[in-house]
Image (cartoon, rainbow, N blue to C red; front, side, top):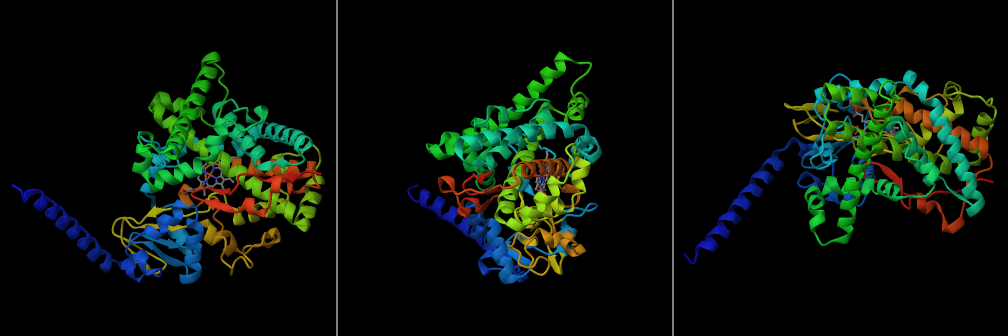
Amino acid sequence: MVASPYLAILALLALALLRVSVTLYYRARSPLQSVPGPWLSKWTSVVTDYHWFRGQRAFYVERLHKQYGPVICLGPTEVAFSSTSAAKTIHSYTRPFLKTSFYSKLRRYGGHDSVFTARGMEQHARYRRLLSGPMSESSLKSVEHIVRARVDLAIERMDEEMKRRGAVDVMKWWQFFSTDVIGELTFGESFRMLEIGKKNQYVEDLEKIATVGGLRIAFPTLMRLATKLPLPFLRDLSATDLRLRNYPIESIQRYRNIIAADPWNPKPTLFTKLFKAGEEGLSQQEIVSNAEAYIVAGSDTTAHTLTYLVWAVCRESEVKTRLVEEVTALPDGYTNEDLKQLPYLNQVLDEILRLFSAAPSSLPREVPKGGFEVDGYWIPGGVTVSTQAYSMHRNPVLFPEPERFNPSRWESPKKEMRDAWMAFGGGARACLGIHLAYMELRQATVKFFRTYPNAKVSSLEGFSDDDMEQVIYFLMFPKNKRCLIQTS
Ligand code: HEM
């Protein structure tokens, strides 16, 4: 009787040892042992996870690519690729590798899948079918005036801040702008951030989304227990998480009220079909999850791209002069169609999305059952494979001096450059909001540089290049979440 607790402990230890031995045995025999990379990665992903936790994983992966080449082992069940041939295999239109469980962790607890997190092809295709029509280039023509009105208001508010403060935090205003646009287009009513004009709880929560999402992916159990642990930092993040869940619920309710007030003539939104589908069987939770996906995917991405664009252009006087010349030559009543034809503006956009992609990190996908050969390596089924725009966009052969912001490299780009450019992802899971994103980016850039041809980077309040250092979890943001520009 006395020996039994010891026996139980011994039995547990023996079991644990057996489990570790079996795992090590399989890892030693894994085909991933022959994939280049640090020896430790063949046995554990702890180093990669550590860099993820610090918002530095993309830089770590890039360093490994520089050291070991285009194929690297990141953990016993993960391989990263940086060639266009691998990207085509992994992100194909017809036989795409499915998204991994990484995306399920981005779902809220008890929450349903969205078009972004859905892993199965059928479920994804169903969401995409319902959502893609209103996001097409031709459908978006009908909302051009809304985007334009929000750009105009953003610039008005920037003017006021410039007079008051001596500089403008363009990051804040682009955040308000993109949040208002996605709110109005999705739910029929803007979040009125531009009118309110200061960061409220909602914007502060949105700013934490990359960190919250990052922690939820790395430590799902910890985040689930966060409300019960006596750690203020975790409790705070957990409260943020909960509020982020409630915003779309409230917004959907507001839209339902709009419909109820005028049922025969409801204001059409990007979501109208989804609401109709609700009657045909799309659950309220599915609508909420898709609404949340739109708010997250459609606000910071555009805002951060615009922030880096203004900052990068203002630092390069030659670039600014060329861009200003082009946009000031436009007639007053220009349309989105006119903007699409501006060659230099397009080069600036290609280049900013290359160097400061808003979603530049690994897009993890699962190798199908039975395994698959990618770039000459046999990868067993179930292993995670990924490509990251951060590395593909820095291939020095295709993009000489990769860290240099040089829009002219897109004047007559080689096909290989286009193939390697993955700012909006690729294949069947490429960005659904690409046309909306371009409309916002073009309208905002043109209005900004027509209004402020002499804009320059400010040093007010100690602002410097250091503030703009990139932090990357899944989405990218500037380290200090501000970007001060002097508009005259
Ligand atoms: C400059 C702005 C943007 C960038 C750089 C960007 C980038 C991306 C990337 C890289 C992906 C693929 C993610 C993956 O494979 O895991 C993606 C997917 C997605 N994006 Fe965007 N995005 C932008 C703007 C927008 C906007 C304005 C919306 C509007 C709602 C949007 C909605 C989505 C959705 C719904 C998906 C998931 C598509 C699917 O899985 O079928 N994005 N985006």
